[in-house]
Amino acid sequence: MSITTADVRMYIAQLHQDFPGLRLLRGRAASTRALTIGRWLWLPSTWDSRPPPQQYILLRHEAIHLAQYTRLGGGNAWLGVIPFLLCYLFLPVPVGFAWFRWTWEREAYLAQMQAEALAYGAEGLLTRRSYYVQQLSGKAYFWCWIVHGSIPQWVDKTMAQLSQA
Image 1 (cartoon, helix red, strand yellow):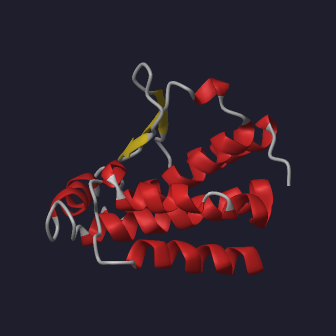
Image 2 (tube, one colour; image 1 turned 90 degrees about the vertical axis):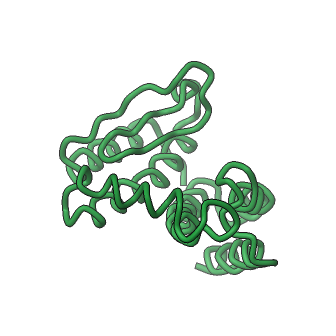
C-alpha cells in the first residue's frame, strides 16, 4: 500500500479526535527522534523531509504512547504522566530490567512494525530486523531489557506473525 501525504493528514486528524488536546510540536534542532509526554508530541526536526510512509510509521508508534498515558491517567493523559514516567524510567530498575519500559516500547514497536508492513510489505519489514533489535536492546532505550535472547526472539516472532498476516 502506498501511504500518501493525505493519509498522514487523515491519521493526524484521527489522532486529534482520539486524543483531544493533542499538540504536535516541532523537535529540537537536528533531532531525529520523536518524544511524547502526556498529550504533547514533539516531532523530529527532520519531519518535513521524511516521506509520508515514514511519517505515518512514526505516528503509529507515538499514538501507542498517547494511549498509554491516557490509560494510566484513567482517561486523562496528564494524570498519567507521573505514573508513566516513574514506571518507565525507574521500575523495577533503570537499566537492564526496566520491565515497564520494555513492555511499553514493545507495544509501540508492534504498532510500528504493523505500519511498516502496511507501508512496505512483509519483505520490507523483514529487512529491518537488525534495526528493531538494536533499538530495543541498546542505548536508545538505555538497555531496558538484558534477559539473554529475549529481544531478538520477540522481534523474530513478531515479524514472522506479521509477515504471515
